[in-house]
Every structure is written in structure tokens, then in C-alpha cells.
Image 1 (cartoon, rainbow, N blue to C red):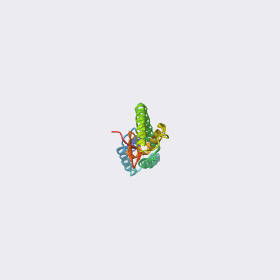
Image 2 (cartoon, one colour):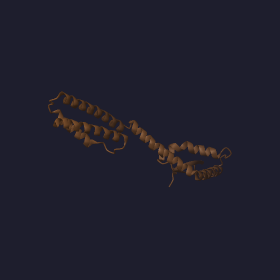
Image 3 (cartoon, rainbow, N blue to C red):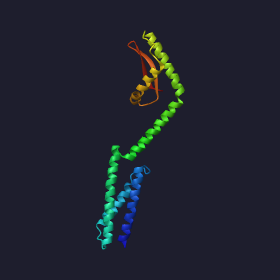
Image 4 (cartoon, rainbow, N blue to C red):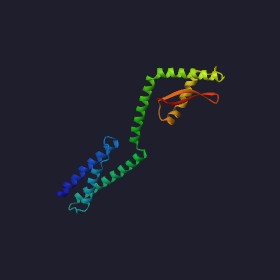
Length: 185
């Protein structure tokens, strides 16, 4: 009767292990259930050396072993995909976090839009004055063109500086006014 109880315990532990791994892959569990995995493996090794008097029990053990091996291969494959960053649930979660960051930054931009307009006006006026002082034409210079130039260069600047909170200033280099960017302090 101990063999029947051991098989029932193995089946229960295997179900629990499958559930815990699914929770780990979804993100509900923070750590991989390695202790439970070791317990299931030890129990399987112990039962592998026991002679089964009943064909039904032997069949049940072989089916549990096959199920465990199949799941273990699947878990190893998923763990490898997670390490490589190719696991679809991981990509979903990272995309979700990225969307939340984007939403937060757009909300911040919306809240700061009046100050951004003031900053754009300041930049436009400074650039116009700098071009006048360098004896360059200012007739073709528009506020929209300055805004478009800034927006066009923003992605590269964000990648280079590592922040999306930028401040702009006008400098004159080699007799030409330029818009320079830096992180806001």
C-alpha cells in the first residue's frame, strides 16, 4: 500500500509543480520553484528503483514520468527563451511597461505644454536674435520650423542623453547659431 500512496503523492506534487511553474512564467511567483522540482525528482528516482507488483501501478508511474519529462523540457525551453528575451509573455509585459512609461511621459508633456510653448518662444526669439547678430537672414525663420527641427532631433537626443527631460539653448559656433540640447537640471 505504500507504493500506491507514493504514486498518489508523486501525482499531487507534479500537479503542484506544474501550477507553480505556470505561476512563475506568468509573473505571479518571483522565483522558480526549484525546491519542489528537486522533491519531485528525488521521489521519481526513488520509485524508479522499486519493483512494481501490479501492471496498473507500473503504467501509472511510467505515465507520470513521461508527463514530468515533457513538462521539464517545456520549462527548460521557456527559461531559455526568457533569458534570450524572446518569450511572448515577457514581451507582452515589457510592452505593457513601455506603454505605461509612454503614457506617463505624454501626460507629463501635456502638463508641461504651456511651459514648452514659452520655451519654444524663447528659443525662437534667441535664434532670431543670434541670426541677426551673425548677419544671417531671418525672414525664412518661423516658429513652426524651429519646433519641427527640435521634434525631429528629439529621438536621437533622448537615446544619446538617456532622458526625455531636455532643455535647449542657442549657441553661436563658427559664426553660425545652433540649437544645443542638454538634460534638464
